[in-house]
Image 1: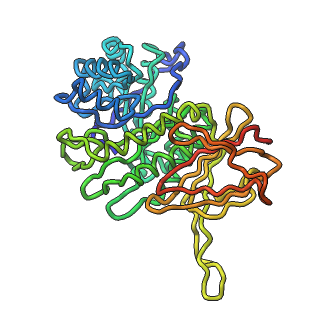
Image 2: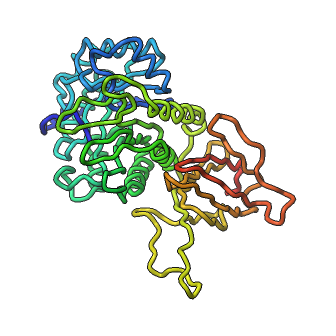
Image 3: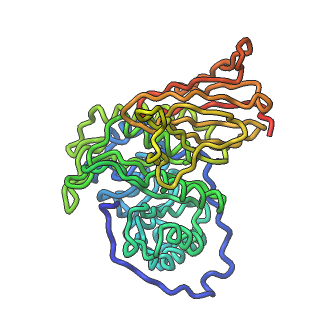
Length: 430
């Protein structure tokens, strides 16, 4: 979803233009925490950007009227003053306009510049124009990121320009060859919750691993009248920790500054339309602090698999489990891994990751954003001797396994609404 639109643009790519281009050289070095919709031009001030930095953001993003050289320069200067990077939106290249790239790169040269927002939610017919623009950016400044955000799974085939979402993502990767895979998905409707949120994360996770590029997730932080409700703190927390369990290396919030009412009537962004910070700002500030505490651990991890734990179905009057229950969310898999012999409880998402030092990591996330949950794990004793927790405040626990009990490789994880907890198994025996 976007409040910044441009008409469809198609461009033929000449083979000669692709010859002798430098290899893509942008590499993600640190976990990215950013947002959609910065303060508007009149609020692009030192005070406002200090406020952004205090909320724990690492990177600012153009838009919301910040889309021309003079305003971009101001955003870049203020971001650098507050030790943040910036991704610039420039109307002259937005939507896929390769011919203007050279001038735009030259005018936006700045120490804080991370890259350029090239397109939001493109149709597949725009991929050739985007490829030409990305290649031109790489030729002009190989170290800058070309950021393109993809549609979610609930977009229609007409919006996607492809028969299925999986084909849409694959065609994008084949054509544009991006350095990071970015998507949005807003699950909290006024009429209920979307059923395909985890399926969207799994499709993106799989393609990210196949192409060996990171992915970033844009989460819902506001409401839109007639379509989306305003998420609670625990619903925002659930989106963030679930994205991390699937392996996201960046989190963007939609939106930071509540946009002016237009065709879409936005409300309850992180900062209100008039600029007032409320409880929502403090929610995000806490979440961002927790992400930053764990970010050095998360960055080198590689997703091995993501699984779901579901509560046992209710028994009928005969003491038998219901035969009509299909508790697995759409597009997901039940937990099955050599490390874990049994897991009872939930509902929970378990992300399993390979670490850099023969270690294994587990993200355990409460899939229910409005209730507490617990999971009783039984681990394979032949594959582990320790279980430690990397806590959200940055501290590391002692070994959580009890060697004096009959079942030493057992641990019960208790989870608050939407909460995630990160565990490590040192020297995991594969």
